[in-house]
Amino acid sequence: MGINEALDRARKMGLDLVEIVPNASPPVVKIISFDKYRYQKDKQERKERKAKKTAEMKRVQISVRASQNDLLVKQRQLEKFISNGHPVEIYVRLRGREKRNKDWTRQKLEEFLKMITLEYKISNEPRFGGGGLSVQILPKKESGGNKQDDQKQENI
Image (cartoon, rainbow, N blue to C red; front, side, top):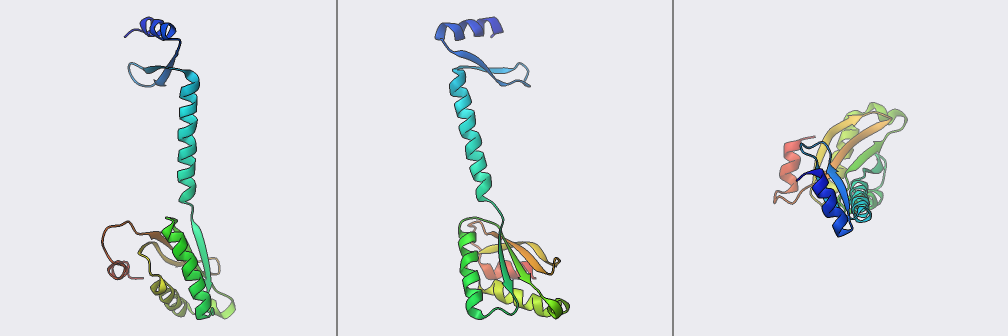
């Protein structure tokens, strides 16, 4: 339909002619109240911002010298983050001479990862940097696989 005919229809209905897709050939327009269109667009943007915010990276920091009870507290905190759908970075903090013994640090990280009861997937391999060892894990999508198989595949 031509632009003049579309404008006439919009005026008769008491509404506005709003351009939805300007880059299309021909441009896509809609007969709608501009205020309603703006409200719908703002509502969609708020929804997208909220969805983006929920996927925020969380961080759990542990020490190689931490007691078993301290690790259990961190494990519960990490499982709460994973159950809410957040990606989590586990950071093993090292001090002084601890930085030299990388194998021992990896072993401590593996022990902590075995404590986690929820299903997860390791997104990045463990890497040293910034005075410690860090690894990123993601919540596992419900696919029916189990954690042991995934850990064997990832093989730290």
